[in-house]
Length: 433
Image 1 (cartoon, rainbow, N blue to C red):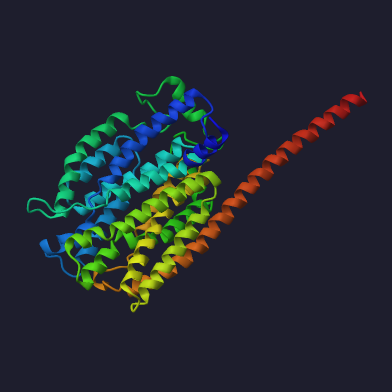
Image 2: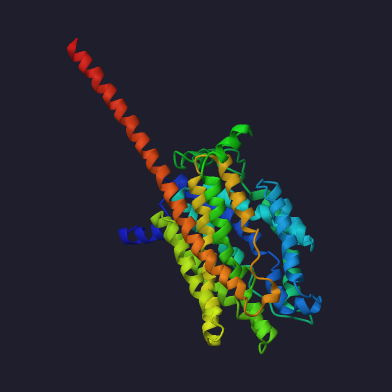
């Protein structure tokens, strides 16, 4: 391959595999892990979009009913964060067949946290960001809309289709999901590939499952990682509320003058900008190994968007622009979880708990009650505060991570220096004899 094409290929898809076996292994885990996880996350029944697409009127929802069902969903979400091989497909079945929001949240929780845990178990740091980005983008693509057909609203058809394809995807997961490298029994991997899946990782990556003990509690509470990473996504993840609560759809519905089809399709621009931002940023962070700039970019876009919407006298076109660039808020999700995977790579148990904790605390705040539409003034002020706080916590996590890495390098250098001094002392002793 010409050097120029080789550089482009490395930028887009990561380090070039060092052997034919590694190339085959990457191809297989990319296909089976990503295909299943992306299909699984893409069929989420999108209540936020359905609410402004006819569900509110057809189900006679009043006041903060919309926020109440999302709160119930969040409670189930916090309960269900268990990343296990069998649990994944089982929860996929529950997710698709029941309309009860608590169980829906419970079944979705393991999908998100568990996927990021699995990705961090199989991929090197230079491969992880873009795979996390593809997973996030698949979830965003699944929120796009369907139009009404045969007398049924588009939101009803979306729920029907999600239910129909749930079982085939779940059964696919039962057969192909590989668990982690240390325990995988995936039929499509050869013995050589199973061994390589573990040995090819960075020397400090721990992907061995250890028994639970009180030492785990001491390790987690005695380090900054659990506090720092949880706080980072608890705050930065709130910027996603622009898109995840479909504020643009609620705004269009509240101000009037737009058809149901327009209210369905116009907010798709937020999703589209989110997908592009996520993929570009994830690819760039893998190439540079710097995760923090993505959070700066996200905060910049969300700050501009919140200011434009707060100035209520601004033109409608400017508000469209503001909501669309707010889609950049999604780009921080994949990067933040890839960063946490990288920070906690040397402790498998800590990594699992940190990832679950990040997602749990992110679901704790509510800034946009439906009754605040269309202006969402309090929410936009809160958004500005969240962006400022995100920048501060991002700097803190970057500083602490860099400090740990420098200490690790200094420790290795001290060990090498000590060995060298011992060797020199031994040689001098031999000469004296």
